Length: 388
Image 1 (spheres, rainbow, N blue to C red):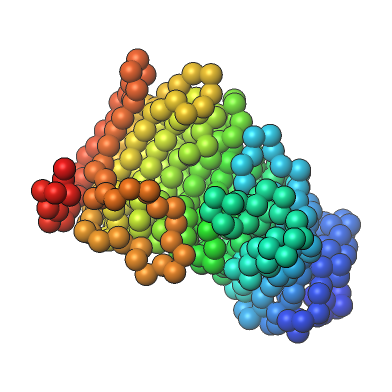
Image 2: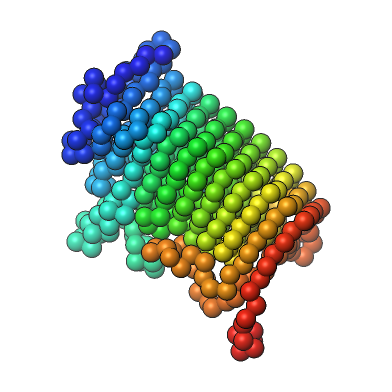
């Protein structure tokens, strides 16, 4: 592996110089080497727009190194979005059909998402239609027009380790149809704007997410399935700390293919608005062989949400063989994410904390659910008027 420094490749860490072209040339150079290469960023702030990671290339950010996303929407471009995809294909770091890629180190990737989203919004209001699908209902730029930190698609053998990841304009780390994906020791703070998920994994195999600290304004770890016949298969989520203004760990809502062989262990959740664990098949997907164990959640509203529905797809899917055990949840009376300045999606009606539920639909039953050693403490305190 060829090791090259950002400085040697004329990449400037002054926080002012736009380095998009220089970083891409350095990545291309590393990719061209016989055994690949490692591009090392030393302490500094490296401003850039979209860059594309390629096979056998490592980006290493040493302590104090910051890859800083441009706040100009014209500095970003998209991969071809997968069919049925409902989220942004724009990204600060993209990869497509690559193998053996790594993003590692003790540095930071900062999307400057709030400033970037506000720039898109401002351009819209002066008549510059950079966002042709502007969300008038929510009075903000459409999610598809806001870049993620990472969008990695159709790639194999991926490692993201040790980094601080923060402030995307949309989802944080997004992986679609990938294989052999490892995300470890990450500190993700993604609460700059709306749709700020932490990690999204779609129709991918052999996935390990471990030792991560995630604070997100939307779902923290979300497994999705957009492809009929696709599946998230062989996924382990282990030893993570989570704060979310939506759900801590969620299957869906996009669930066209399904989820199987998923293990979630040793998760600590706090100050989370919706669910500790939400397992949903509503688009015809199949969910099978799920283990959730050793979960502690405090100041979190809904402990367990298991739902087989029929929002989309030709027919309802299946949801079976789920075990949840060794779980403690302390449910507050007030909204647990009250300290968020940009809270996640709220209900449009007043409600008490929603109780745990396991629900199917007529003729399509949820099957073989095991709950073992579950403790849930609820606050009560509601008035009879609120109950009615």
